[in-house]
Every structure is written in C-alpha cells, then in structure tokens.
Image 1: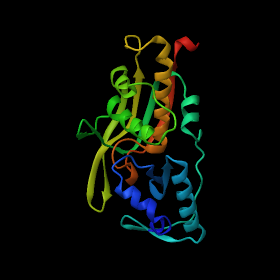
Image 2: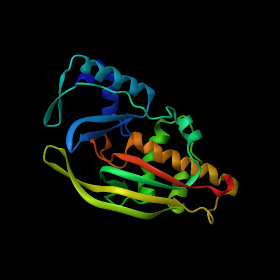
Image 3: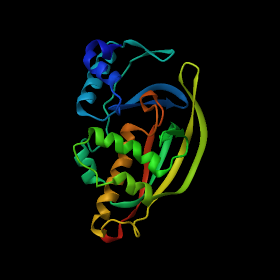
Image 4: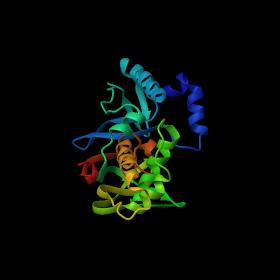
Length: 238
C-alpha cells in the first residue's frame, strides 16, 4: 500500500501492536451511495501521515483498492472537529449528567472476554477509556471505568440489529441506532467535590467516540459513532 511504501516502519509497528490503534475508519454515503470514507486519528503524528499519504494520492487522482472495490482518490478534506488535543477536550467537555450517542455503522462489543451487541455503559466506555489511556496526555479520574459501570445507566434507546460485510463474504452483526445514557451520582462512593471531574471526563470520552468509534473493527468501518446531544447540566454549577 501507499502507506506501507512511505512509512514502512510505522505500518510494521501498527501490525505488530496488540494495543489500541491510533485511528478509525468509517464509510461515507450520499443518498445511500458510497462515495468515500472518513479517517479519525488519535495522535498528531498519525494524522500528519494520513494527510500526507492521502493528499498525495488525491493530487494525482490515484486508483486504490478498498476491499473488493476499486476507487479513485478524488479529494481529501481536513477535519473540522475541535478541540484538537486531549487536554483541550477534557477542559472544554460539559459537566452534564446525560448524553445521546448514535451508532451509524454496526457496533459489536467485547467485554469480560465475550463478544455481544448490547451497548451497556461499561462495554461502551471501556473502548473509549482504552484509547484515552493509550494516547492521551491528560489523566482520567481514579477508577473511572469502574465509576462509569456503576453510575451510568441506559435510559432510552432505539436500536436494531444490522449486518455488514467486513472482508469479502465475512458477515458482521452489530447494532445501529441511538442510545440515551444518564449518570446518577447521588449514592456514589466518591466525594461530592469530585463529581464534576467524573462527569466531565465521561462527556469528554463521549466526544472522543467521534474520532475512535465504538467497539470492535473500528479500523474496518464498524462502530462509527456520533455524540448527538448533551443534557442535564450538573446542578452545583448552576
């Protein structure tokens, strides 16, 4: 591939890694027709590599193989999402008790060694936590994932099971749709003064989902996620 030819050492490092990948891919559709894909990058270095390689391909309208399809790289557009650093993301995240997430390609999650399709708070936020801890320069509150698993509940959802093909004829089953999550902190065993820190981190990770996706095979187009809405501002800040 073009990435391998230009950055062979980086590609070898990625293929040999057992940890989280610094990117996600998601298909783009226009009136149900596929016209490209979106790359979300989790490090500045990898973002620069993606821009360089794909910008070069677009400059000469190169043809590339994408799965079983042949595509022409016609244009590369830089992303417009902000903030651009993990520290900014955490500092600017809202201190709120609720968030809606939309899963736009099939989501499948592995938790406690088992793979399933139910987007429980622990199963969902464990993926964001893994990516944050692997690449971020800002720490999450102590035992954050344990807190999220206890305090956060699913309070509304509209989901359906969907199928996709990830490699030739390999079928992939997951869920798509929207889920409302709420954090209930009244009875939690953390100091009241720390509640805003946990809520802010929880919301920051929900926004990180726009970059990293949710669940398994996010580097193959699965798990595309958007933060739809935030609600329930923490009352102590009002």
